[in-house]
Image (cartoon, rainbow, N blue to C red; front, top):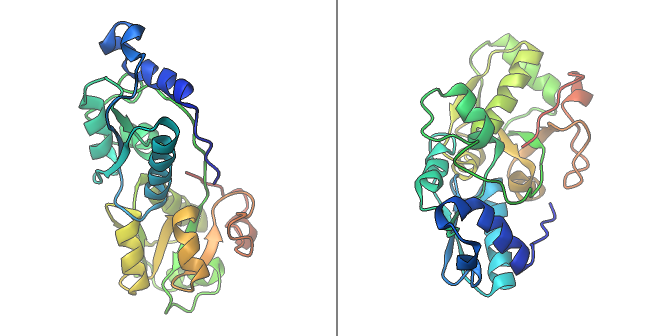
Length: 254
């Protein structure tokens, strides 16, 4: 994923949209930013969102000469971090590294979500999209999705898969639905802790994101079974898609 960091003036104008309602006059923003800015990452360290968030914070610090500090606030499918930002002063010094999980999925499936993504946030810039990826623990003998499907059908409900957020969870549930299999979800607060348990063999399968999983796949610490996009990922071009392995029409991304 390539991230282009906006120039200082452009980013300041974006932050102005976020906080204009509270600040009142744009003249108050002439010197923005003049103190540290928190970049809230609503997932645990080690996942794809964490990687992107820290890269963005680093580049913004370089571009503006002002500290942008990445801070993890995981939990409740990223809604804890999102709610923290929603309730923070609208002064441009607390921003959210938002994802489809807490901004679109959680409010649709959790009626008591304590924030409104349409009124509590203003988008600044789109960073990118990434396919998810189905992984297996290193000790598993699966060579592809057909092996997983066959095993799941032979012992319904016995297999489990880890997920570190709403997006990977729904990706896994879509696979289960289209494949007609029963596999139990094990939910984690973030991708990093789930990766740790997968590498240790505590769970046999996991749905992760390509940016977070690619280094582990290349190092042989986990097995890549399928990417969830309609075409193969440039980061892992040898890993086939779900659609290529018997589920035409399957597609999911973050």
